[in-house]
Image (cartoon, rainbow, N blue to C red; front, top):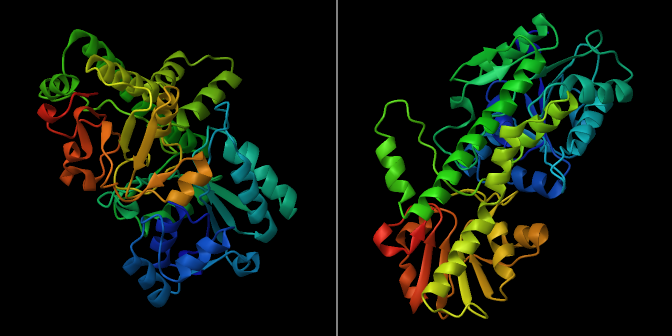
Amino acid sequence: MELKDIKICVIGLGYVGLPLARLFSTKYPTVGFDMNPRRVKALMEGHDATLEVSDELLQDAIHNHGFVCTSDIEDIRDCNFFVVAVPTPVDENNNPDLTPLYGASETVGKVIKPGDIVVYESTVYPGVTEDECIPVVERVSGLEFNKDFYAGYSPERINPGDKLHTVEKIKKVTSGSTPEIGRLVNDVYSSVITAGTHLAPTIKVAEAAKVIENSQRDINIAFVNELAKIFHLMGIDTTDVLEAASTKWNFLPFKPGLVGGHCIGVDPYYLAQCAQRYGYNPEIILAGRRMNDGMGAYVADRVIKLMLKKGIQVLNSHILILGFTFKENCPDVRNTKVVDIVKALREYNLNITIYDPWANPDAVRHEYGLEVVNNLPEDEKFDAAILAVAHREFSDIDITSHLRPNHVIFDVKATQNPSTVDARL
């Protein structure tokens, strides 16, 4: 297969798949496939609800590059380079849930032809592509791996909400099921990724590289979260400590906070389960997860104690939480850890208002059974406010004007002037 003959299908048009498909469409005939017809309809009308691709870029891809989105499998039969970019979540027990990958692999199996290539981008533990996904493609297609069709793995590195490090500006790791296929996969990606590519020697190496990227960040954040707890007991401001330590050239500038989303808060569990299958118990990885998963309850506990110290009655009090998405300036509410603050506070029988101008109230209601408002109530005064997410809109809000004279302000992200808040991580 030569580059001039490639026609790409990207399966899964979420935060990862859509930006990649849009980028590919500038160089190759590209079709985006998604099982959600409403998502497809909105995209073909020129709007991306995730806000990862601007309306201008999306409409340019559709009108000037022939980019098409579809939920009809017949529309992707003539593609020969399939890219799978579906979510890889964990279940209620934090075990990897490969159901979306199995479903996408079945879709590929129904349309793949001799000579075609399927490349997986979803985050997995080493071995999933060749041991879990490819057998599904073989079973459905009746074709033989590395004889009739081939595979690759190129882990996604999308950072939701980041308009600086967009997909083409992030170096891409690539790999293939044979050396020749690896070079071809690398050529395809390098033709659109301006930041360059790194061709890994095997698919398993590429899978392992991806899963440790976010595990490393998770462990580092867990370390500073533990420091925040220690320094609080000592009466020392964590932010001041980190600013002082950051003057050393090789200090890693991680900050304490809530660790959610579909990468950092999930990927370590994939690596941990893989390690356990080989008989090794990953103590540091799981300890980091326990630390970070407990930060929501820790914040709630700090807020309640501050209220009690100020003589504010907790029962039936009114609490304002600013922000619900898993990170700032992004509408993604998947695996948000703000929900842990809400759950912990609810045990005290108080009233909670969640204000987030970025979150979709319907999505929050469907996912968590919680109500979120997109506009800050003007006629209500609150006993406490928790700045949980650093949306840009919150930098201009006079929070105290929405609070009672005796109140508590807790700044999770340490973005406010310390003199204006009662505490911060």
